[in-house]
Amino acid sequence: MKRFEVKVSRRRFQIYGYVQELGEDLLVSIWGGTRPHIGAVGAATPRPSLKDPGKWSATSSNLTFLGHKEDLLAKKISEQLATLLRRNVVVVMGIHWDHMTSKEIKMVESLSKKIPNEILKKIHLSTSSSSRRKK
Image (cartoon, rainbow, N blue to C red; front, top):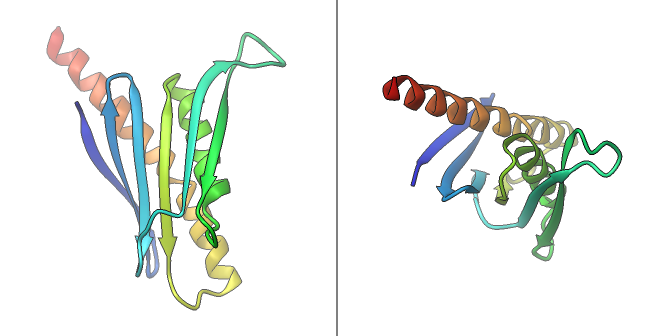
């Protein structure tokens, strides 16, 4: 079972991702701020696109705890990873800083969307390293 951490940051904002492979499935925790927590869960499973069966997409579900706003990000990130990796993906997410401006909220949302790319880099690096060792 592989596990690794990723991090993205900008100014005072740092967002972390912890990834754990559970067989073929992926469990991703994303947190940051002064009070990390579980605010929302997004779960996605890959499937052929309904519009174009030659392409891949994902079907997802969300669970959001009362008063939290990470649901759309958790859903989007789980769908993106499930589609690209063709694996079941669960994203657990909770980010909080006190007294954020609307501009800062948008920056944190934008920053959070970089987490999947960091995850993909590490997975692809790990895959290419293991295939080099097998040669």
